[in-house]
Image 1 (cartoon, rainbow, N blue to C red):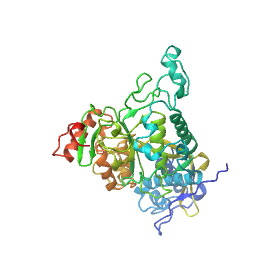
Image 2: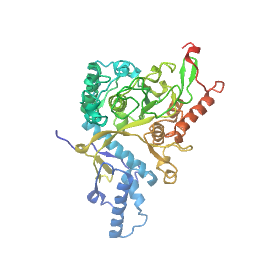
Image 3: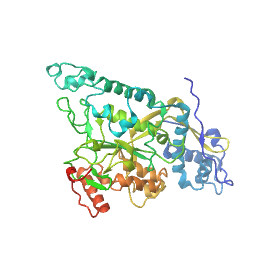
Image 4: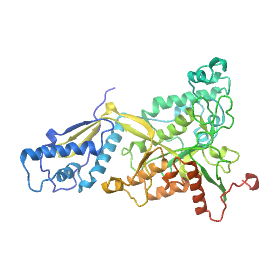
Length: 459
C-alpha cells in the first residue's frame, strides 16, 4: 500500500495587522514528534527557543516579544489560548489523517453468524442467554489440575467437559473476533441499529451475568457457572417501570453488576476520532471486550428479581439509574511533523504510515463545581483539576470542559449515572451505595429507599 502525507491542519492568523518580529521560522523551524509528543510543551518550548536565537542574533527590536510571534503563528489573539489551540490542531491532524487511512465497514460479519443485533443489544438471544466459553487458553487447564481434573484440554470450547459451547455461540464468537481484528481497528464502523441516536451523546451497557469461565473475570467457573455475576464496578440505584419506582439498596438483590459506557462529542465528522469511531467503541465494549473476552451477558432486568425491562446496551437516558460506569474511548496514534509555512502559519501533519486506532480506558477529569468550558487550559485553574482514567463521569466532564458536550447533555447524563458530581465513589462500594440513597431521597422524597418485592405490585 502506498501512503501519502496526511492532509495539513493549520490555523490561519486572525489578527490581520499582526506581523512576525522575525520571519525565519519557515526556513528553520521543523519538529519530528512521536505519538505521545504532539502537545503544547513539546511545540511551544522550541518555538520560544527559535525566537530567542533570532533575538540574540539580530538584537532587540522595540515591541518584539515571543508572545507576539506565537499569536501570529497560531492565529490567536491571546497567547493564553496557545495550549488549547495546539491541542485542537493535534487532534484535528489525527482526525483528518484517519479519514485518509481508514475505510468503512458494517456489522455484517457478526450478522452473517445469525446474530440479531436488535435482540443482542436488548440483552436477549443466544449470545446472552447461553452459557459457555467463546475463547480459552489451554494453559488455563494446566493451572487448574490438567488431566487429573479434565478429560478435554484445548482451545476449542465446544469440547469442554463442563458447559460445552454450542456451535452457534462458537461461530458467533469467532465472527466477533474476526470483526475486531479485521475491521474495527482498520475502518470506521457504521451504526448497528437506530437505538443509539442519543440526545446525551452517551451510550452504556450494563450486565448482570457472567457466562464464561477461564477468563479471570467475574464469578463463573468450570464447576459452577449457573447465574454467576460479572466483576462488580457499580450499584443499581433504582429502576423506573411505568409509574412505579423500584429502589435497590445494598447488594442483596442486585448482587454484582458491571456497567461500561462511551461518550462522544458534538463536533462534526473529521474533527474528533473518538466521535467518528463511536460505533467501533460500542462494538469493542459490547461484543469484544465484555462478551468475547469476559463473558458478560444479559440486561440487568433479565434478572427475575429486578423489575422493568431495560436494554443491555442503549442511550444512557434509556438505562436504569446507577452510581457509576467504566469508560472506553477510541484514539488515533501517529507521529507528527510540525513546520511553519510560507504564510507564517504553524502547520501540524500526522504521518499516515504510522497511524493506528486504539481502544483505551477513557482519560477524564474529575468533576469540580464552578468550572466551565476552557477552564482546564487556564494555568491558574489547572492545578485544581484532577485527571483520572476509566470513569465515564470524568470523561463526560472533560468533554464538557473541552466544549464537546453541552451543559444540558451532562444534565441528561446525570439523571441516569447519579454519581456524576461525586468522584469519591469511583472505587468505593459503600460510597456508591450512599450516593444512590442520597439521590433517590432527593428525587423521590415521598418514597422509601427499600426493596419493593415484585410479588406485591403489578409489573
